[in-house]
Length: 208
Image (cartoon, rainbow, N blue to C red):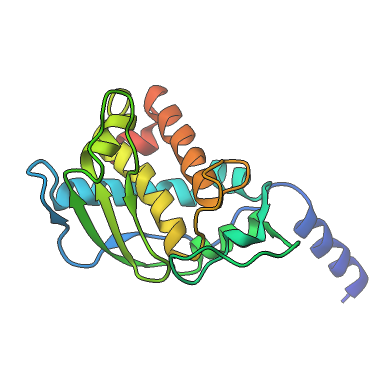
């Protein structure tokens, strides 16, 4: 065997072209959703979880996230702020974190609202602490932010992408998509889902 050619081929594979993961993640419920909102049940939750999984597994999401770098203090082990370091978190590390658990079972809570929306002020959409696998979401706040342009299952899916990023160990730093991992993941998810919905992409429509 020509090991030199084999190594050259491996090197070209690792550095060239699109770096898509061969593994996939399938988000699922751990029991029924605990919902205080009459219109939100397991059926809606399952749609949102499937759409969120579609986002994470899509080449578009993976190509977008691996190009990014973030301040180290996004790392956290609880809901406190992370420690400071001059190191950067590479996008590939974030993607690996999101896909590390291939079959996560999530405890889902849906409340009517957190801080009640006022006009175009939607406030926080939910909360999640790292490594708890429990996501609490605020229906009216999510609907305030995205309900005018997307079905609720799509908006909820985008929110789940954001919150699951907290679960795998990234906390808010600045709430700026340029420096905050969870905000960036949510923004990428929003852009993709909105594009798929507007263009009637069958990958999304088949889940609605």
